[in-house]
Image 1 (cartoon, rainbow, N blue to C red):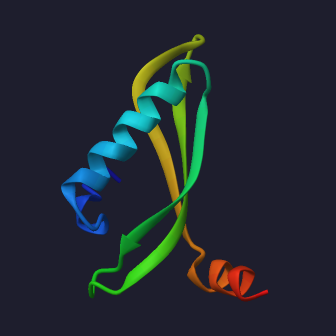
Image 2 (cartoon, one colour; image 1 turned 90 degrees about the horizontal axis):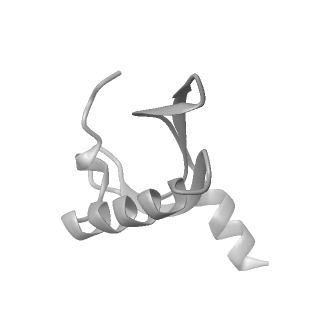
Length: 82
């Protein structure tokens, strides 16, 4: 898709924090998964489950990733309520 996702993050520091965690994790793993606070297009806060996977070619990382973002706001709120 090649679109920036910066608008989804509450702040620049959140983007940098994720990048730092991601690069450290990618030293020994091919995928990274975590929950994050993000915002929708209309600025509504949401909780997402984000999975980022390296794109590999001949067992070498090509510096590209595939990312999936799933809104888990209701699920996490229900889990906290239990």
